[in-house]
Length: 426
Image 1 (tube, rainbow, N blue to C red):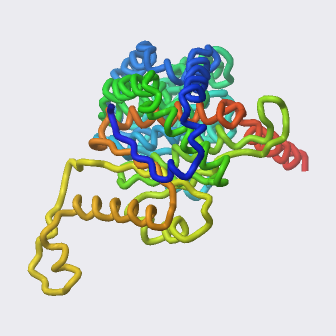
Image 2: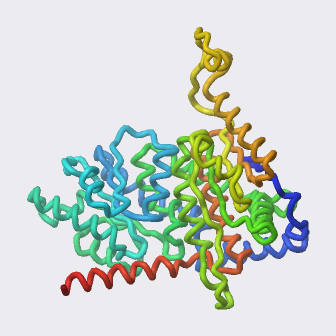
Image 3: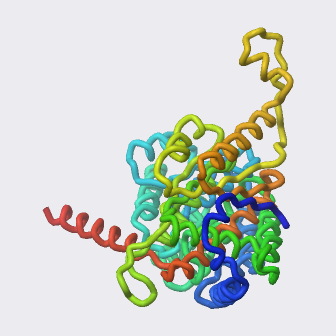
């Protein structure tokens, strides 16, 4: 097993959610989901052509010193997470992931265009935020008198390979277009060119990232249902939700490198599971609200609420067993706090705080799911991505909703464009 899971609070919910016949039904449901050609997230890691296309682009542009990814939501959160957790390159990375004018100016003012590659990512090919970034960068190229026929030397697009305005523009400008498979939704797309290309520029071992995702599949599909980490986790979460009204999911890695994993998870969990209607078209207004956190920092802020606030939260905690680097806390000071730390190193202090939080959760009857990985590397991050994507998809079945659409997001986009149309006519 690539990593170990520990559950606290499992005994407080009905055993019905863990009976063999129920788990067999859920396993069959998961198999149906991943084998449905409409949903490609589980099998996309087997498509070797996706990585090969990115490797070809990398070979062409690997002299670039600055990599700028322009995208929002799933077109940026996953790549940012991989950069934070695994990035090793000395290249400058910029993620234009919002449309705040002041922040955009701060990020790209004075950028060296000649040494920069701009990666525009939009699954639909018409995302307003991505297109606005393209308009800004195009204007900068025009100001530098760089002709349109040369923009292909500064830009790469990633979008749907069949129906996309960005694809049409790429053909018009002769810009290289990488494919985001049509059956892989944006928030599930990190293991596609969306995440592969920036990872290559960041000296991440993408093949091991993929290998980690593949290795975890054996556990996700295990026929030993009482040991299957996917089914056990889903039933645990659902039992707490149905019986205890635990409808908030705290995601808390004890690792600064994995802090952005929390923000990636927030989109995946919220956009997939927060739905107005169920599969029968009935209004249910259901969902599991994600809360990003990370240790040990949030022990000095949010953990107070998690420990003593409403009994409506499950903590999903990521434990890193080994750190690549460490620092001795040995010192000759006589102050009590410093003296007590002297026999230890920084990694031991992190472990102590992690264990202390779990023990406090237990004493306060707060449920948790602890996921222990051996270290923060490509194998483990790839496994976490596949596990969390699979868990999200299966939780949709438990909640009887569609985890692959986002009608609430689409409504906001529609009204935003209506406002722009009105402002243009004013």
